[in-house]
Image (cartoon, rainbow, N blue to C red; front, side, top):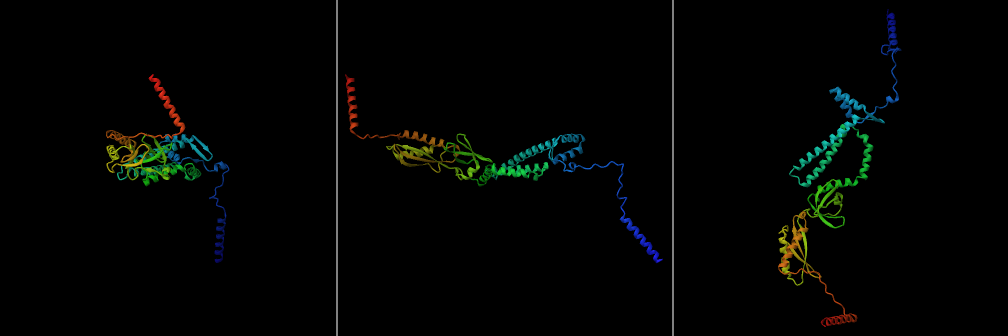
Length: 376
């Protein structure tokens, strides 16, 4: 009986091994000869599908189709009107979405920039220079944020723009170097407060003649300086950084004006100096403190020359009109006190010689003859 049991167990084990080694007919279906064979995918079909310009188009279609079948069909038609360039597929829907997103981002950036500038203007603890600096920094941040938000909304992969980014960097390094240099220079000028709107600085025109003008605004590229004759100079910010600038109102707006005057050698110099100071004090814009002064500068060819020094606190209103007012006042004061303002005079000395004596004799004889002829 034991032997029979062992034989039965061996037979069962052999049957189990055969079952495991045989293929599973139930797991693997038998192909049906009558069924239609599946097409073999071609290499073109197995390739990567065309790249969409914007992922926003697919998201928009899905969202609109879930709400309205009619609108979804319209979007499908717009999406079918497409042009494929290599692996890139550009449809009319993609174009409309890209244009719409760009316009929306630009509009939002303009509104945000205006609102931010209005809020900065309402901050009372900032002076004009700090407000202008804050506005420029805000503008840079707003437009940088608008650029990256637009890229994110459109679903554009920045790695795909690596080549164009490198080319743009080269363009900045060569073609736009001065532009970015002027931008940084303008920000530094505002932070340093050495040049600010409202300052009066000395500028030179194209003929090289130096005049003064008032800074109206500091832009991204240049500083706008307006002279008294309403000529507006656009000076690059970088020039004000590296060149010497004469700022009349950097630490103080007080400016000293020089008025040159000449009087006769026969005049009373003490009285003349007193009248000069009186004429300067009568000018409306001349400050009482510091008081005007008059200095004798030189003994000229025809006159004794003086310089009247007087101070004003509003150079943006001009200096020529103050000088003119002082000279007018002095004219009438000199007339009133009989002080002569000389005109150029020259004393000529002729060296005597034989020829000159003969010429004088001849002229005298001719004059006497003419006189006698006239009497007869």
